[in-house]
Amino acid sequence: MSETAVRARADIGRYVSDAWRDRYFAACDAAYALGAPALAEEDVETSFGTTHVYRYGPEGDPARSRTPVVLVHGAGSCSAMWHPNTPALSADRPVYAIDTPGDPGRSVQRESIHQPERAAQWLDETLAGLGLDRVHLVGTSYGGWLALNHAHRRPGRLASVTLLDPGGLERVGLRFFVWIFAGLFATFAPKALRPRLAAWLEQPVLVMPELRTMIRTAVRAYRIRRPAPLPLSEEELSTIRTPLYLVLGKRSLLVHPQRQAERVPRLVPGARAEIISGTGHGPQIDHAEEINRRMLNFMASVD
Image 1 (cartoon, rainbow, N blue to C red):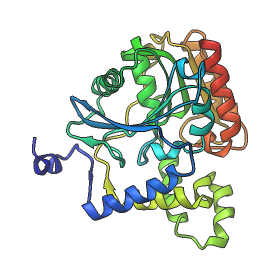
Image 2 (tube, helix red, strand yellow; image 1 turned 90 degrees about the vertical axis):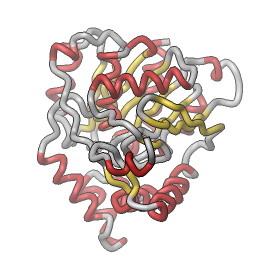
Image 3 (cartoon, rainbow, N blue to C red; image 1 turned 180 degrees about the vertical axis):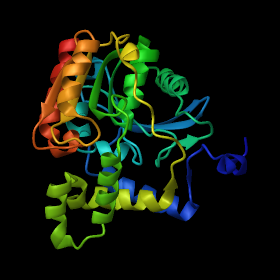
């Protein structure tokens, strides 16, 4: 399929221009520079397009031989959002951070992947292309839906799944979209007001210049063309047998934390659920050191 034909598809994400794409890449690179240096970048060809992946890793054995971590970012972002987490995670074991096709990043989408079975097929083809037979899958927000959906449909390569304030548990409500738009408008606020707005909106990116610039540029540069995913049913959740760790922000507006902290372990045998105080939708950013430690402890317990 030609690039022109792909751009004409209503269900395929795209950059508005090459110039805006390059501006966004520059903003991403500034955020990447805050995290661990990537050992390599790789493009994986799948049935749905080209998936761009960043690889990080520990310097010595036995850490290099441990089960790797695969990170899947949230909607409207790219794998640069993991910069608070890549240093600690990659010091312990290999790490792969994926740019999801259909979101701004260096992946190139050619077919839609928002349908649950297609999403699982895309991720499975990506893991296969990387030569990964067993991984700890970590997803946040929309990436959490991708990870949860994968645990339901294609669990064969999964050692565990960690969900950070994920989608896929409840239908996305109006309050979440209001929060998203309020946070976007707040990025234009005077610098002196941003710390107060960041605290009020639970938006730490407002006081992180690199992430703030990256998000603002993404809104201008890229057009996402997919519907919000539907949550998994209780019947679907009850099929999951992969070890699962659910981390929820106490003031999350995407899900009702207490409800899901009680519901998920009831439906998924052996699932662990924790609610983190002092955070909303971004516990891995607000409390990076603590969340990194908890994730690594969980993965070690599985291994």
